[in-house]
Image (spheres, rainbow, N blue to C red):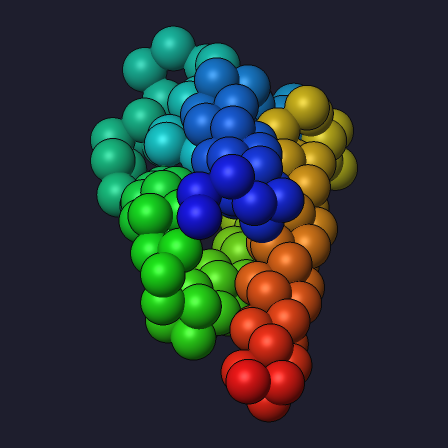
Length: 156
């Protein structure tokens, strides 16, 4: 049945991930370079900057976010196959953790070295964390449903 609490959590994962496309993750304003990092791009605020030429810089962030959106949407409609749902949610949790680690350990360090400034975190930096919490809650909901079905099968 599609009207379960994990469906709501998965919809909230999709909403949080889509919101991250519209707001910047972080801003780096330094003496040499000024860069605003989005999920889909890293935009230099300095005109004619050499940094603007790199179009594939934020492709891993875009790929991870797109993966989570797509597979969360697919998972909503796999309500008849709870084991597959749990496996897909586990993979989405792993992708979100990789996204968060990649952002904080690679992108922030790289852009801090490039600009010579510290990161100013913006609104969208919290969206992957929120999506991760909702994915864990959705996993717990599917797990509870699976336990409920198993206990009902035992009683028959």
